[in-house]
Amino acid sequence: MSTIAWIGLGHMGLPMTKNLMKAGHTVRGFDLSEPAMNAAAEAGVTTCASAAEALEGAEVVFTMLPKGEHSLAAYGGDEGIFATAAPGTLLIDSSTIDVASCQQLHDQATEAGFEFVDAPVSGGIAGAEKGTLAFMVGGEEAAVEKARPFIEPMAGNVIATGAPTTGQAAKICNNLMLFINMVSTSEAAVLADRLGLDHSVFYSIAKVSSGDSWPLRTWYPYPGVVETSPANEDFAPTFTADLALKDINLALAAGEDTDTDLTLGTIVKDMLQQVSDAGSGGKDCSIVKKLVDGSFDA
Ligand code: NAD
Image (cartoon, rainbow, N blue to C red; front, side):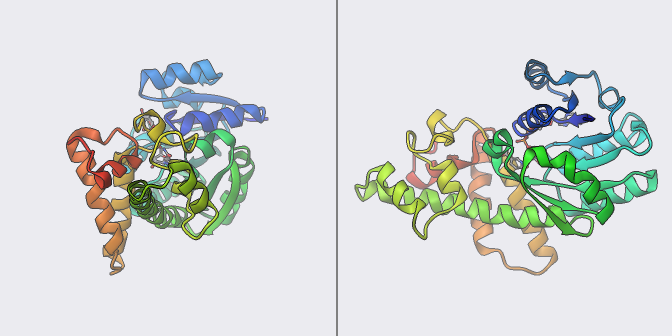
């Protein structure tokens, strides 16, 4: 069993570390947020005062941070991972970040003599808790294979995507579909409600019919239908609207770079932007249902 450093113990990071510990690994963790550190300590993570301290004795480090700028900050600088990790430490970034920052991290890692993979995940908090996340892993083949056994306790699927940054590319395209499907689920759920259908009845039909989707089964936007739905707790966050906005903007930027018209993505981005601009970006992204039914309190 190994010692694993973990940087970023938020909504996703903490439940992911629990599955590593269940598999027998020791996890040394660091987060900038005190509540996140307290929750991690309670869960059995050895909490450390800095990323550098978390890296002591670790053969691999995972980062699970919000955006590209956070990953660049955690890896770079005098106190960063490149400067403080022991030679031979395997570096795995599971954050969802833009392809340009990801390429920069690969380049900097190579320059500093480390193996690095981009390994973003899909499956949400429920997948993180159950250890059933889909990992999309981009990087040199040897590094990807070295990362695989560390990833497996947290994963339902580990898919090698090819060259460096292709994990992030896959994740950005997946999440474009996710957030479009979230809005389509909201529109159908609100319409079904107004047409007099019982929420659970319509849900049970759509789940086994051609309207099925991951947000339908995970985030059905009325309370009391799906156990994992943020609607059960007034849209308390599982995946914040701000992070969703970040992801859809990554897709739109990639669309622009590749001359790809993302009409639906643009509409969904405008909805998430509206939520964020109104100061509700910390709520769950499925709160867009309130834009559909007109109850959003801007
Ligand atoms: P989060 O905001 O809950 O957690 C991120 C944590 O990183 C925070 O606790 C923050 O304090 C910490 N942090 C930021 N900079 C740091 C630094 N330099 N050093 C140490 N800690 C630092 O976010 P999350 O929901 O856990 O998401 C993390 C990543 O996973 C994001 O890129 C997100 O897009 C992606 N993701 C999220 C979900 C989801 O359902 N929430 C699903 C798949 C992927």
